[in-house]
Length: 263
Image 1: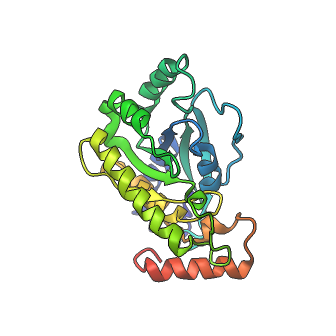
Image 2: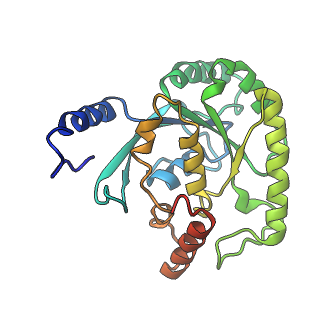
Image 3: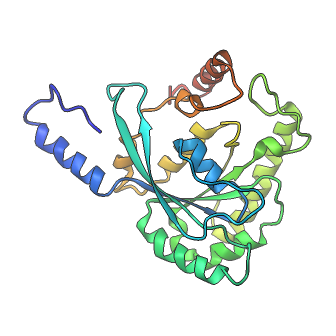
């Protein structure tokens, strides 16, 4: 991962220890939630993986572990690669006969993860199941952060294709959804909740979602996440289809204007 050429001999042992720790126990993320909210699609978009996605049949029936490689595109680390351990969870709530086993899997895997990303779908107003499962997973709530997927499907379905942004009316509806879902999840969570609204198929706000994950990594492990933070918005767009090179550059420029601290 690290280019150690030219490094001071005094720092070389420290950097080697960091590299060893990074490869022995890389930063890890579990992507969890109900069936059909786009967990595998999110992982594919964020980390350029090829998990099987189906809108009509059951997805994974076990935790799939993926060692995701991220190619660093800027800073002194440009040209190197970083790795994250990503777990794709089976979807809850699809079959009452399977839920007990799936929940046992969650209870087994979540303690091993640094952060767990709980995804809810933008168009699903009913969060009773999410609230119920969060109560069951209460011992691991400190690891869980929240996101709202599929915001490009919010009414009136008039996504701005040119700018790759929601229309003004969609944006109003998305903001209302974020407030509503945050409130309902906070009731189960027992404290205020921040939800990041995004679209994996549009590669919309993936950088903000990634920053949200890193910001909530455990303090003692956050330095590992910082090592893979040298990305810019273009990293999430390089594999996006349906956008011209100019459109991608415009999106990157807009992100950097809105987020100067991350640019």
